[in-house]
Amino acid sequence: MTSMRHARERITVTDQQLAGWTGTRSRTELQLSGACPACHDPTFMNLPLTSTSLESAPGLPAPTTLTASVPCACHGEHPGRPEGVAEGCGRTWTITATFVSDTQVKVGAANDPHLTEAAEALRAETAGRLQSVRTAADRWTAAVVTLIGLVGIVVPALGRDDIRSLEPWARILVGGSLLAALAAAAVAVVNGYSAAHGLPVTRPVADDEGLREWYIAHRSRASTAADRLRRAIVAAAVTIATLAAAVGVTTFAPTASPESTPVQVTRPDGATVCGVLLPSTADNTLRIRRADSGDIEILRPSDLVRLKPVKVC
Image (cartoon, rainbow, N blue to C red; front, top):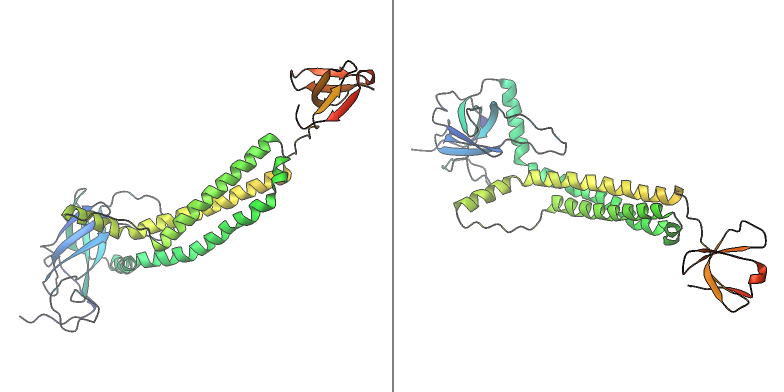
């Protein structure tokens, strides 16, 4: 029998033509199989139940029915098939999948023209979703890397001396903010580039189960890339926020009161007192907090023979 000629067209099908079709739900995919209503060759389709885009979407309840556009993917010979097209007779049709249970699906003809158009648009988008997500990720990554470049500009500009002059709590806050900024920057860069170019992964495909797991992972690459891109954008925003916090604290936090250099006082009897000078509360007196005991020593001019600064007591 001569196979029918290849033609790109949408056909209308009936429940009788889909009577032999079967469908099962596996994870996030709808697996359909049966005979093509046009060429009658066996065909199948793995229809993803999610649509990956750059917008976030809330979780949805379990579906009861789904309208899907199904292209013929048979391996029969069809004259006129375009070069580069390896399968199918060119026909597409629309079905309604009714979810009987968590895994079992009943297949019937679709009768809503609006849902038919929507299903066709979804199928077209799904066909190229990995490339579209990676193209977007490539462009976003350039923006993320530019933002991360602010780390190399802001950190040196803060200045070590400026940070050291702050109150202890402010120094801790600035240090924590800078560490958080560097960590978020690393997360943003790694996720951005892995979204745009993928990560090298070795998967065993030693049996049918391994092949099935590989195929599931293969079809989820677009969703994975979109998730990584979102993480990169969020991490870049965290980097900017933590850098802003570090700059703000360094600029506006109070500076610590300067401590005097330790001094060593020699008494007339040759004994020495070493410690930090404190503000005096009376005229002609010196107040020193002793380094050895922490006690406050009050000295008058007659108690001093020599006073000199020292590095350490």
